[in-house]
Length: 373
Length: 246
Image 1 (tube, helix red, strand yellow):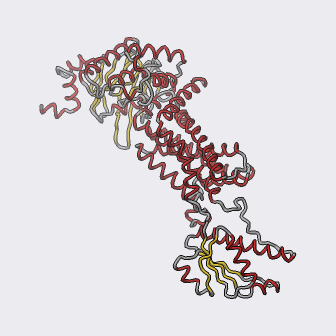
Image 2 (tube, one colour; image 1 turned 90 degrees about the vertical axis):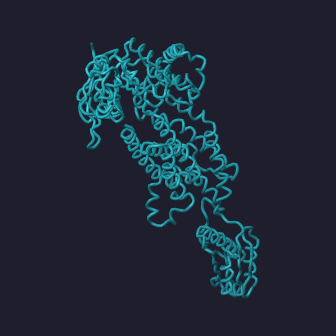
Image 3 (cartoon, rainbow over the protein chains, first blue to last red; image 1 turned 135 degrees about the vertical axis):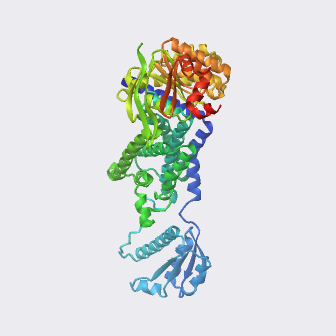
């Protein structure tokens, strides 16, 4: 067939797909509102940053300096002093009863130690039963001590090297900043993988796919035709998520929007290839939907580093997380949005996604041909 | 007479099971050919090979003058197909379905418009051209699906149980459409489970266990098997024990 005819056939098919999508108003509305709802819900509900940290203080022999340090904590909006006990031993029941999250332990003689130029002995004890929150609380407390420390030195005009524990890129530790990239990945996965799987398996179930395969349309044209309108929808979703993140939470956007959209296209294509593969393998719409959910949504949420940092996963899961496309895409989006990183820094992740796309496309086209016959 | 379909020793095996066992048959241009057989006799497998959905294990075939193995692209462009499952899109309108298939087969916009009008006139569906196909009665849908399968004027059209679940009046009208297509030179290759429809065919074959057990005009077959109707010919061939007991 001539190229123009091929393109025309493809165009007719794309128009048909667009009509399917536009005609199903309910699904379309849900898909368009989804990123908005997700950003808002995740942003407000599942935050790992902690406000209202309950602080227990152990200060057996208060002096001017220890009181100044305690004042720093009292003055911070995140901390609330719930108990002041004389000894470290007395802390145990407080933690056991879950009444405090963090304890600040000041050794006797703080003012003397500072005056004598000796190291100040201050200890932070954190309830780490929830490790991520624990780390965050510890970091907050550490920041306050640091700022107190640097204030001290400033007053005496001395020079002192500050330990570099500043939280770069996300100085206020706003978890919403870290969530939004994950949400973009999630929405794209949903629209691309899930919707393609459903719409392809619907054609399979109803027998229309057979008719399409008997027509001059080639399998790749059918796949491209399916994918193109959803890609457009995916773009709209990325835009919505970014806008919601910016307007509702003031999430910064430091990098190139073009690069982000390009990366999103790449990632959406990976999802679409997965969706095609799932539809080719499964035999009904329902199985395809469950298959797509299982193979994309779960790993994208749990193994991608979106909620649980990859670094804190057990080794087997860390290895598995390498084949989860979202894991790499989230690094890219975070890099672009929060660090303003460019291709020079992100090419490895992008290359990995390209390889994944290639492998999946080959597998999808192949299984498409074999399974439908 | 030139052949629109030439099948030579076409075979398909699934593991140890031979679904289609070296069938050989010729169908002439403009012929209405009935491809009969009990469920599981291998009809659908044979059709799938002819329309390029399944590769043969052995043998060869030419459809519309093109080898199905080496010229599958040309085969696709020159055949129409209507499956036993309804092949139009319920959520698209009558007109949109016509436009879609016209576009897929590379017709120009003008061709699509003209042939679409013609089709709607012939079917009397002008009034519902903007209605979604899903809202139409089944009989209308089947006739529309057949017309759409012919929109690119294929040389051969394959119909896989096209009249399943349709009332007798509509079935009659459907066969009138089939004759009209054949009169315009389109070869019709149809499977059916209705034996009265089989009588309408120019020639027919009856498949039993992957082989063609009988082939000829309805009259010749009835004479050959000494039966008053194709129905009885079919039962004798497909279920010899049952016929013997009757």
